Amino acid sequence: MVAGAALLAAAGAGVLAQSERVIKVTARKFVFTPNEIKLRKGEPVIFEFTTEDVFMGFNAPDFNVRMDIIPAKTTRLRFTPDKAGTFVFLCDVFCGDGHETMSGKLIVA
Image (cartoon, rainbow, N blue to C red; front, side, top):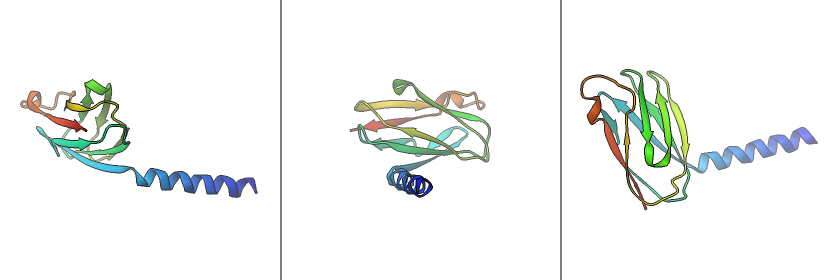
């Protein structure tokens, strides 16, 4: 009976996780696609990062959030914005000439 309850709880948790909005972000020299992401304050999302280039990073300093982006691997970051406004995100791992312009905007309403 306990095993059945655990299975039911795990299935329920999977349903909740699937209801979160997934935002796919591709990092390439020297741009994020999309480079403008609209979010709602308090709404959890999951970022899925990919790159086929070199090792990169995602950093949203106003939210104290960062993630490594590893070539040929999908990395996931659960994120819930806790304030409204327009905020910069950027690549924080040097990825070559042009790295300093690799940024985007989080627009939180």
